[in-house]
Length: 162
Image (cartoon, rainbow, N blue to C red; front, side, top):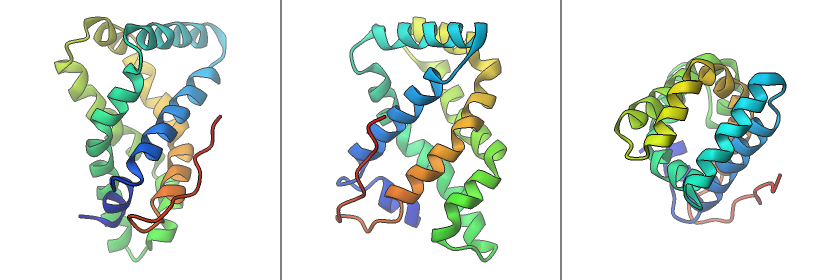
């Protein structure tokens, strides 16, 4: 198992990683402006209303696959002479590729979900999803820095509550 996977998926850290992923999504959605921002905010509100904890549940369900994708970037970075400490900056520099990798996981899951309302909304907003995820890669890199640098079983830095 890669360093990032071992650390971010460790049972003592995973709940904080999930919470911070949800915070990142909330911040990204609330930052959207204009007509498309109104539409995205409305769709997000609808998805959150489907079931209490729906977004958190989806993040939890997809986290292993997302971390697997990030582990591939970690392996690439380490093979090129980088270090775990410089991985967050590498992810930001590769934001388009990182976003595409993460979206591929979500695309696959959207095809098999039983939540038809969520599926319809996902397909409606999928064309802009890549740009939206790219915008969140810097926050994701911060998550990797905050939680991915702690030894499994030790206390991570507190998650922001934005």
